[in-house]
Every structure is written in structure tokens, then in C-alpha cells.
Length: 123
Image 1 (spheres, one colour):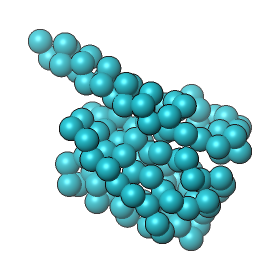
Image 2: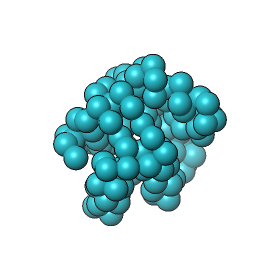
Image 3: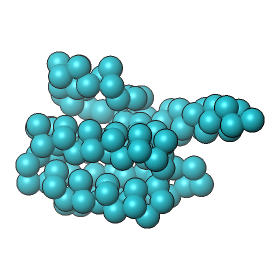
Image 4: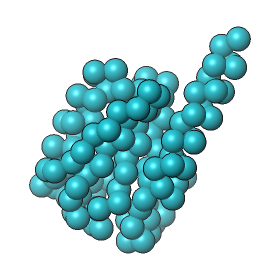
């Protein structure tokens, strides 16, 4: 599976560079997600700009990312969904569980706001 990873101070952006996130690609994505969170990632932006199709294996990989982010008290934010993938998330009711935003910039804002809330809650 082709993908890119960009690290910022408060978050990591993982961008799958595939049109399909299916049973052939999802195991590799899950493996990369586990590696990212084991290496210290807390907040992850999953930039889906290239992904046009997701099957149940792909949804499972996204839910693994959500669980890993929750375990680190971090955030998973999904950005740049295609219309088809967005409809699938709504049909499967995952839009109520996942944070979905229009683009990477909006995702970064969600993460920064969450970080501010965490810092204020610790005081």
C-alpha cells in the first residue's frame, strides 16, 4: 500500500495514496497505524483525499485508528472524504463515532482545540 506520513508538532497526517481501501490494503494500513501509535503518535489526521472506495476491511482499519487514538487520550480526525466514502460512513452510522471534517486544515484545528481543552482541564 502506498501512503505518505507527515509529522507536525501536535499531530501526524497519514495519507493513503490508493483509490481503494479494501481487504488487500487494509491489513497494511492497520500495521502502519499500530506502528505510528507505538512510536508516540497521539493525534492522527487520516487524509482520505485519494481514497474513492472503502470496504468493511477498510472501515475496520479506520476503527483501529480510532481505538488507538482513544487509548492515548488523543484524537483521530478523518479529512477529505469522497462522496462515496462519506455516504458509506453515514449508512454504517460511523459518522456519529468519528470526527469527520472537510480538509486537513480543519482537522488540525480540531486537534489544536482538543489539546487546549486537555491543557485547561489539567490545570
